[in-house]
Image 1 (cartoon, rainbow, N blue to C red):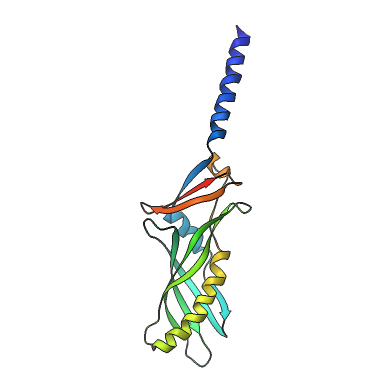
Image 2 (cartoon, rainbow, N blue to C red):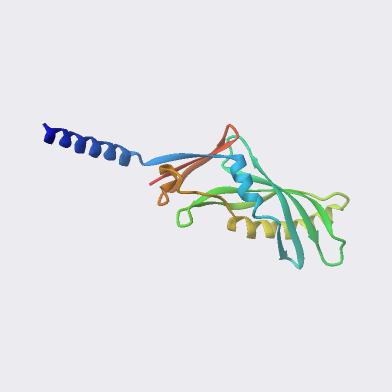
Length: 178
């Protein structure tokens, strides 16, 4: 018969669905190039802080093995009152955070890890650091560095929360769970 075959098919489907539902987490592997492509579209950024104008441009995504933070090497231009405009490089980083409502990853707990401006005194470097740091702290958490697409079943898990994140083999591995 026909009926036992249908019953077996229904039973197999139910078992497969139950097996699929029992898996409470998934791991996304995100290539550096994917993050780089997204981040590049978000710059240049110009903001005011401490009566200064800070321009950030030409980001390069930096992934450090074993870290749960994503780094950005950026060119920076700083215009402070009574000083000529200064140019340099900075490295900022943030902890990868997943926001289910937007199905996107952001950089939270931002930090200015390094600021290099040639030809300025230590006192001037500190004056330049304050507005640069303020802009990093303000801007990084608002930038979606990676957006999930509904291109496969893994990425449809929009209601999940980020359980862990680490850089492994030059890629970001993000574990999402219920």
